[in-house]
Image (tube, rainbow, N blue to C red):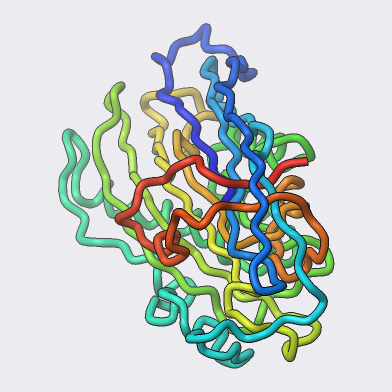
Length: 318
């Protein structure tokens, strides 16, 4: 699993508010390498990337070193006893995601109610904006497959567009913000599966905040479907618990008005470590040789469960 965490709240807005982010020191995450070769195939694994946010105009995510590792996979994959055989037309069969909604249908917006000084109409407007950003950053194939960030930029406050561009560059915290398939990895034509929630509340400085918690399961198309013995060989799970803040024009500078990424945390599970370290998604089946791996102390199904805590446990290293 790769995980990440970041903290914001925005400090009080004012004319002297700096336009450039002031980066804070990041908290460390201890790496623990564990070997995990079972039945000649890669185990499900997760990579953890932790980030802290600095505040002085823009919130800044910075990734930690990945921790943990992946283990070697044999060139021949066998079906695990008790597991359903992989079906490229129904790739989620046998996983908790099988019953989830398809793609955008999983980004459900509840009934908008007044929150603090904000009317139900304002809350409904921001819900719609947040929904559009979640879709653009996690589901839109123009971004996930084509790495086209323009549709996402168009939904954010102008100052956020510059900042997001910095974060998705090499060395940034791309996986905390967007899902992009690694080069050479192809998504299945079957839509990703989605489960999650969003709710609105008033932030510490009176701003309107929408808290989201979504898990997206991506199925990838393997070059050799006959070598896939477990659906998790080609499924990557991405959980993102992120706050979005809406700043209205009457409260902030013009360039800051709009939707902002706020604090959040999350993880990536059952992925290829090399790709994850570079900020991209790829199925673990693409990695034939790796080092280390997670222990057997957590049920793989727990990574599909919104009721489970987001923890830094195993991951990728080296």
